[in-house]
Length: 478
Image 1 (tube, rainbow, N blue to C red):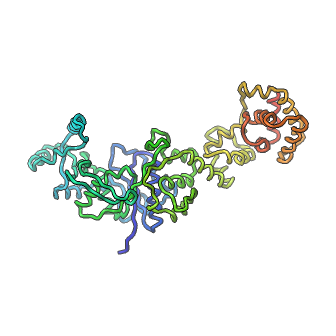
Image 2 (tube, rainbow, N blue to C red):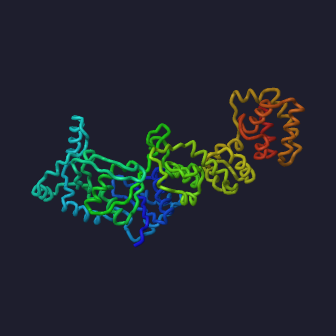
Image 3 (spheres, rainbow, N blue to C red):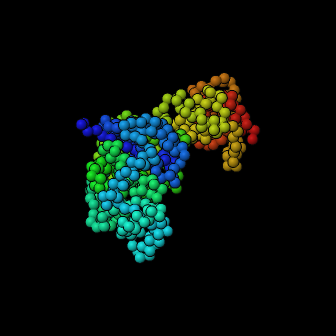
């Protein structure tokens, strides 16, 4: 039988898709496409306390939006379903019963209060806070009696008490854990649902997963997983644990530091192509150290061997720079269409299509996200307001002379002409002796309400001659 790469992305439906989860999905997708393998989506929804209604639909929609098309999973089906763990509980029960029968797992009747007291006692003795294995010592008669009386219980994995385990990770390479650091992991919770540890091992085996590519936070769980593979007599898949995503201060990227959901970035006007490109470089780089890749190019260039061990800093400034670069590469009409919803939500009237188009042309060089367009465009729309310092500039005698001169010269023009505006600037310098900031600051203030901004010809191109004259006249009258 021909060997085929099979990878999976197995998120929990507990909310929106985190950018870290997007990276995990992306790397699995890229590895499948690079190797001609299969990319499977599996929903790990056994934690019913954290389940969020609508999260699965949002997850699938976001993956589609990002261009990560899976081969098997919800909505698509496949030969290894169901692809929701909540629909596979009878499968897990069968395997956990086998572990108990073989002496590799046991029922634990400890209550939450028992466990809390146990941990507090351990902490008071400066010991490692973990389950002490007390229910391992129960006799068969005690277990039968507890079950007969209906005591709630969990099922725990029997972990060796001493020694160590060493395994090879495709990113971390050789990794060793002493067994004393690993407690007897719960496999089946008291509500009958499996924990991640049991379900993912059983599912990965039954779904013939060849490579598990996931975040570094799962590395410490591998000893439990490998022990399960050993107890079941199964060959484990190859493992690759991705470096953590970090803030600039090297703390772990989390919701407390701001937006981390993919949907948040998309709603703010980050382009999918830019976001995929940026996320791909969080912990991976190609041999030529390029910055810009299409998804198709990433599929060809990706390699697990070039994933870094060290944490990857989520640099928002770099994302902004990259997204701005992508915006500037878009077709003009494409940007105009994409920006419309942001203008509509801001309340800016863009019914004047000529003005809107020219505003986009000028501002596309000055924005990093689509959502910035309306804020930047306010200088061309609505009433201008001036503070005291700005009014001092407007009230200067040179400013008054400048406004009068421009009003008179522009009123003889019917349409914007870039060459005539440039000539007007030169004529102003010669006729009035006004140049530099004494020329540009008063003009920009009158036309856009700020001393810094686009070039004067670009401003007039957006406003048009009539609106330009009207704003100059208003400034002159203040």
